[in-house]
Length: 203
Length: 201
Image (cartoon, rainbow over all chains, first blue to last red):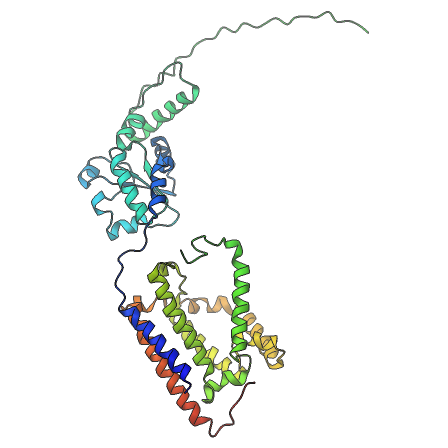
């Protein structure tokens, strides 16, 4: 047998044997710190409570909600259809089943942004994509969706439209009727301008 | 870092260009290894020429160890590599049919094209048969479909099914490959005394 072949065989056995003795590396999938910092600084991960409300009402199949508070908080009050993954069990296999679904956007929320943001950083470092945070958390949810405040009279029309949507959403989520004071009709006095008649010249 | 295409390092618009380049390289290596000669290929079944077995085992061993080192260095993520799903029934029947075609025609699909490239008439006839086979299979597919997809294991790997780590398995596989190299060399030496050996220029 050719000596070169024997040499090659020895090389390949040494390489294959080397694999057995390589020290174990725990986890290679690491987010680049610089990129992570950049992502943390971006507000793009935030979704407003209005968007979340709309998504729940429309039963948008592309989104799922995850409550990262402790389970007793979750049992007391949470959003409809939300999963519960407490912050300390984010690294378990069960949470992986919920979070690791392709093409589904996950929205994290807690009482405020704090825990949800922490959870967001952890999931980001774990390599999950399409993770968002509900801006303001459940406190903001109560403030804006459940008990919306009427905007000032001088506010732009978009704020009134938002207010109307929030009132509707509040009815949807709480089941209680809110008095709508948009019922009063005001009579407008329409004064029509008289048409000015211009002397028509013949030609 | 890798795999380059799934991670978007290379845009998927380059797929066909890359496929073409890999195809050319594959064809070149098949031809350079003497695979465009059907005598070389069928030699495996008669025991006078095991070059096919040795070339493919070498390719498997090199790719296997290379990928494991690349994975270790973090240059490629093995979890993102596409693993062809395993269908036990159709794979067993398919390999038997493939082997029969191999020994009857003297080519496998890839090598028949390298045969055509250097102008072999038997390779052209073989490729005609290949297309006929593809046509018949496609026409009969609705009837065969349930069998074809039957007994699926999904994208199973040795690690998943037998619980041996990739590193251990590759070491065992290298040892097996070397034993195979040696044994086939012995068989070739014995058989070639009686059978007129094929020499490729």
